[in-house]
Image (cartoon, rainbow, N blue to C red; front, side, top):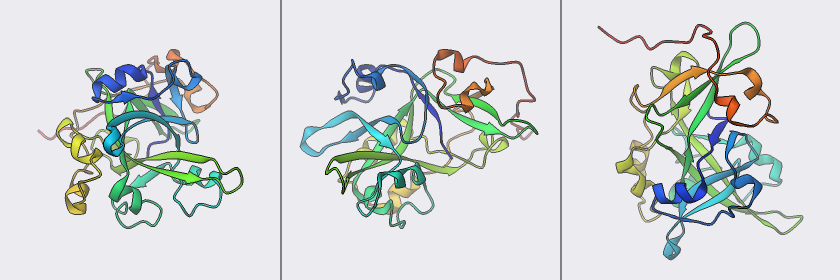
Length: 239
């Protein structure tokens, strides 16, 4: 799964990388570098808004389909499984027409060690941005009448590196697939599903970090500091 990530890159730079227009207020607290983005918090996304073009926005992490009764339901839908995303009542409409990219500098995953779960930070070796496949929606709160934009990260089976600590990981879209994924006019479900495969084993680097990450209240670049080796899983390559 994907339940925690870093979005420390400035929204204007994210917009440049993904050839989009930033609609994120640079003075907003949630637009500042964030090193422990958690479910139900604002999440930076890139999406295509018809004739308005490609934009960078903030959506609530946890997708709210039109039939949701409460905003709390989003916490159950932070991830959408690639295997069922085209048929799930909660995600199929967004898969068909409202796909997005969740840009991230990296994400965290946990491994059980006998004590507190040990977090690892996974990131591109070249410090490029990850383009996670995402879905978005907009939901009207029946009590307040406020429209709430929300998003989820699409996950797939883990590649061999990540499989040592978890059986799922975010779908990481290669550069050549991003335009089609964002284009709501692309409606070939079979083709779109073919984009949701595990990435190559060498696209991520991984190292252990402090268990301070386990608390969503903790924030700051110090969360990315490598800690002393704790039997880090290694990728066993065929020889």
